[in-house]
Amino acid sequence: MTLTVQPHRETLGLKDGQLFVGGQFRDSDETWTHHHPATGEEIGRFAVASVRDVDDAVRAARKAFDDGVWSRARVQERVRVLLRYANLLREHSDELRGLQALDNGVPLSFGQIYATSVGIAADIFEHHAGWIDKVGGQTLPPYQGGDHLAMTFREPVGVVAAILPWNAPFVLFAQKLAPALAAGCTIVVKPSEFASFCVIRMVQLLTEAGLPDGVVNLVTGPGEPTGQALITHPLVDKISFTGSRTVGRKIVEASAATMKRVSLELGGKSPALVFADAPNVGLAAMTCMGMVTMGLSGQACVAHTRALVAREVQEEFVTMATMMAGAVTFGDPFDPAVLASPLINARQLDRVLGYINRGQEEGARLVTGGTRLEGDLASGNFVAPTIFADVSNDMTVAREEIFGPVLTVVPFDDEDEAVRLANDTEYGLGAGIYTNDVKRAFRVAKSLRAGMVGINGFQLEPHVPFGGYKQSGLGREGGQSAYEAYTELKTVMMPL
Ligand code: NAD
Image 1 (cartoon, helix red, strand yellow):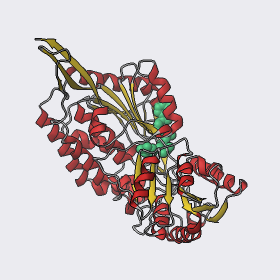
Image 2 (cartoon, rainbow, N blue to C red; image 1 turned 60 degrees about the horizontal axis):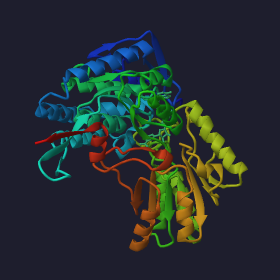
Image 3 (tube, rainbow, N blue to C red; image 1 turned 180 degrees about the vertical axis):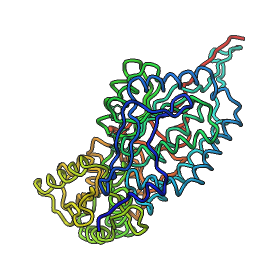
Image 4 (tube, rainbow, N blue to C red; image 1 turned 180 degrees about the horizontal axis):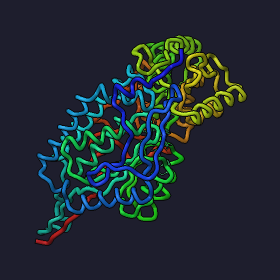
């Protein structure tokens, strides 16, 4: 039977997507047709914002900022809007999870788990609502003695361009918009062209929460022309971007012209260091394999895709990871028994299959997978969970972000080698350590050049900083660091 997601369009009442500028939904001259990644079916159309549309959206955000309709509103009113929004997200959680399954193909079963969860997005808004009346500046003592006042103030950075990838639209929308709104900024948000319908609905709900016109504006469309027009716009003060390193570089270049502030959450090639004294080697193997298959099929920035495993337990690790690979189910994202998604588009499918070929050519041992899924799933972008063992860290599959269901297992002989291999990467987003030796756990954690290190487990939460070292990004989302990233620090001095 051929897979179809068409009936869910009706049930979810999916309409063509519009732009949202200055408090009004509107069309644009061009549209984009979105195809479902599991079936290739046409899902719907949404507006492609032109350079002029983007200019209108940025000017609307600029006006709302300069008029102070949000940053100067009563603190309690701003808190209430964010809390109301968090409640609305929870009330619409089932609908939003359905929209996501229709948009980027993430299965309903996984729409409750951290990265793809509407509930966590709601938690993030609640968390940041709590900062609004708590972050202030400092009063500093007179350096030369006598009477001299020096104070610092935190002020909103201004107009923020928030640019999102496709893989976790709810949480990443929240990671950017919640702290930016808490800080008093105004925003133009651009979702990925591969997950726009989720974000269009998120923006509609913001209007229901009572946000004043112009504070959040939405431009949909691809990188060219929409994204490029946004990152080069002179009236944008800050770009907050999550996506690939390639586009991240373009953003750094574009920001130079007007010295825009920049926050970047980019890719990763995160290692998991599994020592022979791990509490449970099998569980470590299942966690790594789960991260590269369950839910997003490895299309997750923090997934521990590079397992560095003590040579004496490599086979035990590989056996358990292979069992896990066999347990992953693919298919209709609306079927509760389906656990993993397709790759987002044909280009990504070709990339992943290309990396798998390259791994075999370079001499990595293919343990399982390595092929596209056929039969009922042939019209979707599905790839079988894949494991490479006996990988050397200089092989392409161990160096580049594959963004697919591929785990590479690199054996090591001692702790020093494990740390050296872990740090031998251009990325530095996450890392995992599996050991029963507490001193080793902290010694290794301190040696790793990575932004987020899990010891015998990995949990991401709204109040903890999230971000990477090296080419995995700039700055941190989550918690106080996120709020501060949407502020400027002003010093005011006065001799008394
Ligand atoms: P992408 O870089 O292709 O696209 C991201 C966004 O940038 C999209 O909205 C796209 O339209 C836009 N864009 C493309 N070209 C642009 C341009 N010239 N100017 C402005 N905007 C432009 O990434 P993707 O395929 O959507 O997502 C996958 C990548 O995101 C992976 O590398 C993954 O690791 C990374 N990611 C990182 C995190 C994190 O928190 N560190 C989280 C999720 C995803």
